[in-house]
Image 1: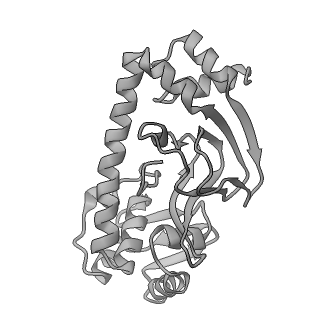
Image 2: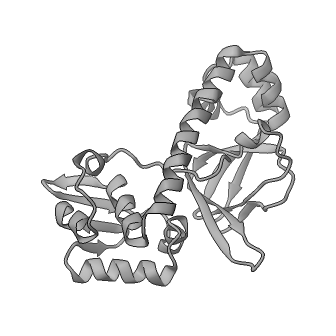
Length: 250
């Protein structure tokens, strides 16, 4: 049971809960649990019963699948303020299709799926808000499939840099990597050695510089030209797009 007022406020601001009445939110929070995990701890594993969904308050967390050969593939990176695993309760999927592991220290709230579903059945506005969110995720999923299937590794890395770039000057920008490079490489379906080779190539060609967790883009147009992708100022100016795009509904 979570009683801290500030956590109630944070939860109520999220679109999945913003249309719940105070008494509904209180009932939901009475069955919620606050979870604190260290870096590299697993929250759940692929194939376990999916009875709860989560809101990430602090930190970064990766969702990954393990293939029959024992290799892991990062499906999504969840950042603070985002929920995950809520879609499973709508298609009555009983098992988690992925595993969840923290990238850094994390604090999460765990919600009971059955309790939340019962509230939605009695609250039309909350139900519509959830439907709108699922529609947005579906569009993002389609874009993700197109990128992963139609673009090569170099183009996928370029698109990531452009979508996460913060402009610093005319035709220049900066990207802050808040997750390890190995996680990012897996997320972009790029082999770690290929990812390192691409970063080194861009650095040697004086397209980027690395400074700690920052990647400095020295010439945006030249970077686009290096992989024969048409320059799109609308994409390169999207400095507020810090969200990852999920490839599956979690």
